[in-house]
Length: 286
Image 1 (spheres, rainbow, N blue to C red):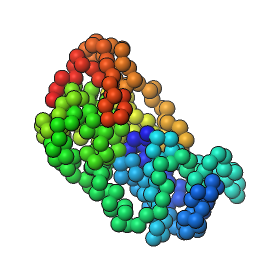
Image 2 (tube, one colour):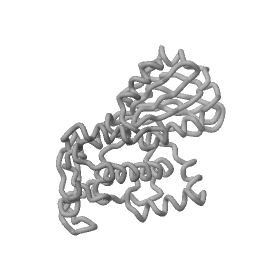
Image 3 (cartoon, rainbow, N blue to C red):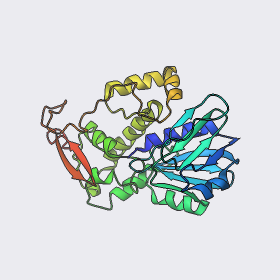
Image 4 (cartoon, rainbow, N blue to C red):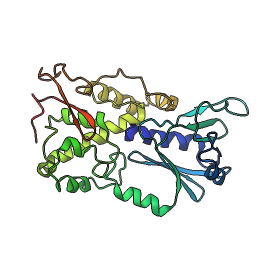
């Protein structure tokens, strides 16, 4: 399932391609045809993300999209007067002056009102990519339960936008035992986790890929600071994962291999419906 940085990157692309202009809206598949007709020709005013939820404001209507496990929503440029014909089961198509976006396989594609959007947002924990949120809300929710931090980081009501890769990697980065009860997480430890998530997801948006290895993060931050990352971000369509950096992780999908830090054999276990990867040798904090 796409993690929060992917949805924030998608919202940014939609805003750049279609923002403040009328947009053509159709449902080639037909399953969203009636609602698409209500949106067609109206101005796309904003595209925003809250965790893994995408909200697109088109005049006074709100399009809510959740990609789920298999959904895709690439934003593609086209030449000439019209984009190419849709391929496959396209639930929703947006067409602007120079770009089109085809939504396939979403878990949610619906028109909602402001009350429904507020309800969705209130049910979510703070999003590390939203500077207006209160991270202490997540800490308060952590402290109410003895569920392990490895499970809690996957709970969107605790932290919005975090998926399996980020939870495995951030816990390893801070040597945290993933089975540490949430009720025992100290304020200092929580702030370490939160600040790192903010840092990791930010570079993830810019490069369209999950970066958790420190050497790659430092290089990514240097490129963001000096502007050399801008053309990479501009080239991303969402059709595939970013590939500027080599895909490397400390624990994710490395069960049975030695930990890069301490040499202990990495383990895996099903936690919160996904495979958790961790090092029993050096992940002992909690």
